[in-house]
Length: 424
Image (cartoon, rainbow, N blue to C red; front, side, top):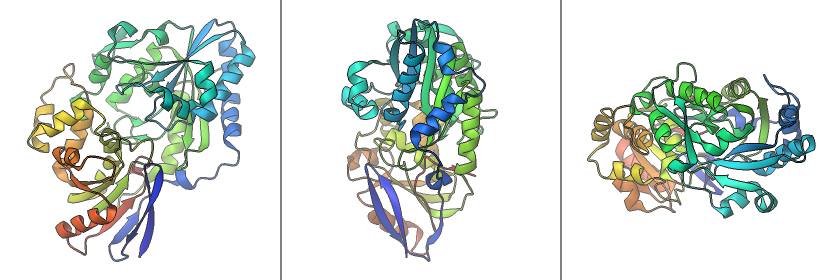
């Protein structure tokens, strides 16, 4: 009997899998990677050795104002560690510079004050100017140009009008952009809803290159990189974190070159070989990424890559914040079947994308091929069922349901953290 730990919300669940059923445990080496230096030393070393850029201190000299873009409450960027270092180095080089921190909410809801305190710490929240990007506020964005895809590029005015724009973030596998971090702080981070939807069109989401760990030929990445360069994103600090959300490496400098180096590092640690099974158990890595069903689709894609056709995906995710998107929920709940959703969405033109279309398109793709049992004791079971998934309060209950469908001898692959791996 194998005893396996699964992150769930802010705790760890332990499950037992019979040896006769367990085929493999797919884990990223990110979680076992041991850094030689502490977090602060890692970050300062990256800032001391920028990739493809002059030092941050040189960039801020002579500037009257700047904007630091940071991730929102749905991303585990360790801003309590990174932001104080950035602010100290900037002010040591230019004590009088006006600094604003802009939260890249993308198409998410605004980050609350309490979430800001949890993310940055009380001192930064009380002493710095922190603003939420509002993607649907047309008065807060300006037209910058046209994306390679043909969509209109509208970006946050504050980001576009500042003298210096930099960003912080983290790099992990991403289910359609290839990897998070880098250029994503601009698009979707501080882009208008109209721009986000053009970039996330059904045609691009359906591309074989819009997959986890893939940047080359990825049409979504191409748009994002263009947006970052149009925004004149001058410098990034991107970290890589382990399962405890601790920094194990950092990359600073040019928004493309530093990001690419970070992606190579993550790929070397995160790439795992698919082991096809009847039942796949996966998670979204616990809090903060498993707060809603919307985000949990990411962990499901890792399972999708190693699940036999007609197999069962057991998604262990708290989803205490509910579905995570009204349009996402309604598009799933008000349609007869996942196949019907897919047929409809592929007829939607590139400039006619509706809110959350990308998310329900990917979920429908998964549900069209597999049964998903979502394990949560913090989310309304009826909501889950209306979205064409099954519900279980515990992993054990989900396994019972899965064994009834696939038989007691069904083979199981476990992915303890679905958002941290690139399944090949």
